[in-house]
Length: 216
Image 1 (cartoon, rainbow, N blue to C red):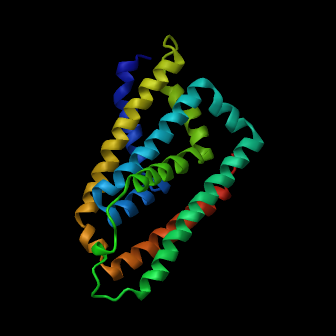
Image 2: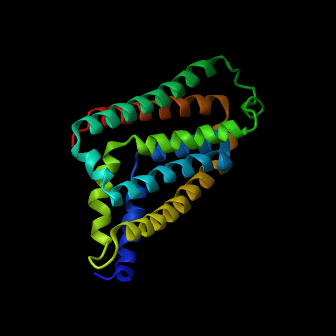
Image 3: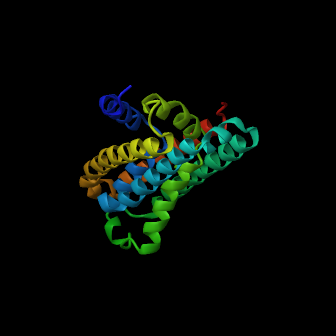
């Protein structure tokens, strides 16, 4: 199999995988709705940093060890599920507290500008959500070898393909964030924000429960 000839199929597969609903999509949409396009950027970069690390782990054989180890898989499953439940609970708590905000109040004034600490916190949330997903290890093991020719070095080729995947996903996710961010003023209206927090919190909790119930 020629690497260059396989790139279109690889790109199509990445687009289809990226477009599937999941924790990444839920996080990005919530950040973009409440913080605008710029607020979603660190979340997207954190998710992609985690994805790239998993790709390197897969190339180095570490992902296979994680997928084969009962203990490692269980630890990742518990951490991943717990973090999603935490994020979901935080969103539901925000929805509950916002009931005390009057309908005429402007939430744009209540949200302070994103600080450096807030930027890194959003980046970290994205990275943890990706790195603590045990299915990511199994996915990388099954996905990348299909596109690595036998005569090519495994680690270097996987790292190159992962860069392409990261680039494609960054474009897709930032496009989504820009689209959602354009309606940011509407999303930040008290009633709409409360409903968004309630919906995103419910989705994140459901995803956390799904991760907790995962088996290999």
